[in-house]
Image (tube, rainbow, N blue to C red; front, side, top):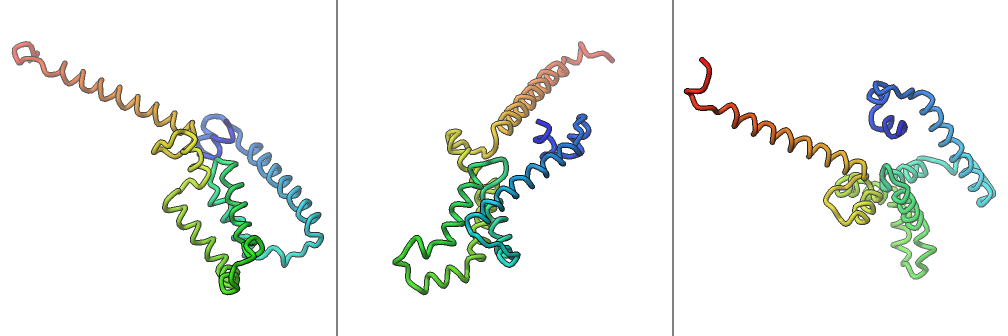
Length: 182
């Protein structure tokens, strides 16, 4: 819960008494451990590592995987990484692909990632993971986490009770003039 509060609002979490510095340190250490394990596995598979392997295009690829996958989801980034990696190896996966299409895909690969990011920001701002949560929840118009839906329901209930209280107060304040104090 503290991590979720911290992800939403640093000052709000701090105001609620959450000590945010140790939580941030733990999150960064966990991310570094995951990156180290991923790097070790990658080095074992490829057999050769060099800084030239990790240029701007690789950074854009990883950023696209995270943005397209969405926040608060594990399934979304996994699906995004599978799809974007498949796009990289489309020439191998589809052997009958014409050479012009292969060369166009290789030259426009980064542009394709940018186009996918723009389309997802326009049509699914919370990413692919939110679309899957929406489908699993029965296709509601609301795209978000279950806690978001609960908080919206609580806000609607509070607003409705305020409206009812206002309407009750209005009917009480409309007393006949003869009964009203002067």
